[in-house]
Amino acid sequence: ERCLIPRPSDAPLTTAAAARVASLQSLKAGSILRASASDWLLGKPAETEDFSPRQFRPAQYLHKGVLLLLSDFEDGEPAALALLNGPAVGKLPESEEGVLFGGTSQLGSFSERVMEVGSEDASLNVLGSLVLLPGVLAKLVSLGALEVAEDVGLSELLAA
Image 1 (cartoon, rainbow, N blue to C red):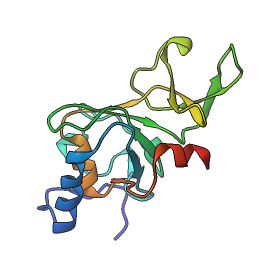
Image 2 (image 1 turned 45 degrees about the vertical axis):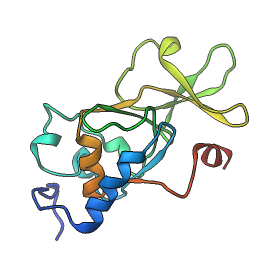
Image 3 (image 1 turned 90 degrees about the vertical axis):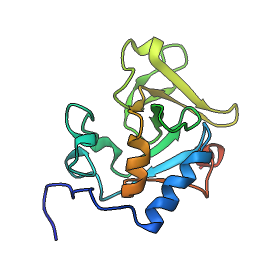
Image 4 (image 1 turned 30 degrees about the horizontal axis):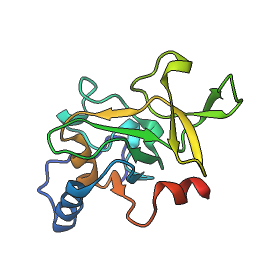
């Protein structure tokens, strides 16, 4: 079945979805998440109040996105992530290093908002981030729109 309206998400959690959500409890800052290639129709993965325009800014840029968790996951708290494979949005004036789009939250003055992620060996600069309201990260993981990348860390990802 194909249509432009995202699927409803009022179905109960499957065993697999419950296991994915349970894995979030141990998620630490620096963890990598991958966004689905098919669950971001019209910028949202489901047609629910959690993803209404009042609560969730459309995020088509998450299609096949690779995200970095910026702080430890805590249930009931907002989750901040940075997009690691966003498009180039400029260069740092002092070093000419490229800067990538990191999300629509915390955009502002270019020089004040650029964040360096990684280590001395491999790093990249991102402008902006994605801040999700409490419970939304768990909802995205339960729907399969985001998944924890257990098999790769930030240093391996940036070195590739």
